[in-house]
Amino acid sequence: MSSLTTGSAEASTSSRTPRPDSIMTSDSEQCEASPLVSKPAHCESGEPSYGTSLEREFEVHDIGCLVDVGELQTSFSFRKLLRFAGPGSIAYLDPGNICSDLHCGAVAGYKLIWLLFLTHALGLYVQTLSARIGIVTGQNLAQHCHQQYPRSIRIPLWLICELAIIGSDIQESIGTAIALYLLFGVKVWAGILLAAMLSYFILGIQRFGARKVEAIFIAMIAVMCGCFGVEVLMASPDVSQIVKGFFIPRIPPNATVQAVGIVGAVIMPHNLFLHSALVGTRRIKRAADIRLASIREANFYTTLESAVALLFSFAINATILIVFADIYSHNSVDHSPLAAAAEQHLPGLVEAASLLGRAFGKAGPLLWAIGLLASGQSSTATGTMAGQYLMEGMMRLHVSPWLRVFISRSISLIPTMLVGVLATSYLDRFDEWLNVLQSLALPFALIPTLKLAQSHAVMSSDFATTRKWRIFGWITAAAIIALNVYLLFPIILQLALHGAAAACLAFSFLGMYLLFIGVLARYEILSAIT
Image (tube, rainbow, N blue to C red):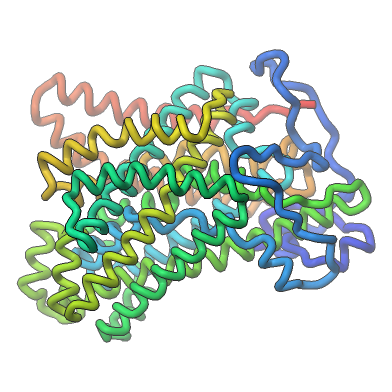
């Protein structure tokens, strides 16, 4: 991941510091900050300035005071890494991930392990870009989108990202409700209501500061590691099949939806907005003589922290996939009746507990339910914080976090309750298509991230991405868009068979989807605002 940014030879102080950009930087760095240039014409007058003023500190709302990372150091410090630990772990492990892993293991066996790993690697790449945007400029991705895009682009962009957040809220509610049902026998509809109330409890913890919130997330991740790790040891899977699934890329024809779901479950669009803001909880020394070195140090530790967090995320997701691949007997040449049934009816989170009970005894469902509950609660605050930063940054709508939770949960509660009460058996299919929704919305967060990260006007010549990483980023975006279209096109053709009106509506949706992506990709990122 390393040569993501350009830069130049630093002064003697910074040359002895850890260089996150040593692999992310070209040899033509310049020590001075880029010049400030004029304000884009489309931005409303009176807006606060932003851009490449590297001395700016974040304004962090509703998540506690800034965390002091200490003085600039000339060598690697594990203690300093711990001071940066936290933001990278707040994401990537929610009930949507678990549902996606379960379905991939049931339908495709071990064959999609490579895609799971690749998606996490791409997640590290885009998360690193979003974090650098926040660290270098002192403003998060949503604030940049407000400054760079006119209202005609901003509003639909915001609505799409909000829709993705609501989809994530629904997944968290479903996961928590099912966990409560498995643990305590609580009805699913009642569990959905309890999940909504638990959101306020998690939100209240934020008042105690960023480190308290991050400690709770890390503890919940540890619980998931323990629960799902024990289950994979109990399963004793075929190691040769795991290695084959890791190194041989293939997507079975019957697993296209699951493949797209992996991308959306791991790289959720609102996490890019969230991570670019959460890095602002670290107070970086920005005195003129050390600011470039301090920013490089922050980039290094943030990237390393994200890599460790995503490594744990991959391990947890992979264990779930492997356990259910083993249960569904895809490690044999002939598919078992259970595996054949999975192709007709995807197993749900409740059914998964029953399968684990038959395979491993009483411990299996208990560990599954505890891990699922930890997953639901660890991701509860993610959507709330992401929505807060998105609403305030992109639309300048300042809403109380408590009201934000009420609005978001109220909107997500309606469809979730309808499915929970009227069609409980469809909860998991609903969950799977919500992962697809995340993948469909991903380009609308990824494209602004790529364009801002490569802009010398916004990131300065010291931190803008180099040409090879720009090419890699756009190839990644094109691959995700192509995978989405590959999934959408057969569905649209099926809808077109229902008459001219349905065909017109379906193809209009596809056309508008691709048109808006094209507008974002072609729109020029203008000069930074003075």
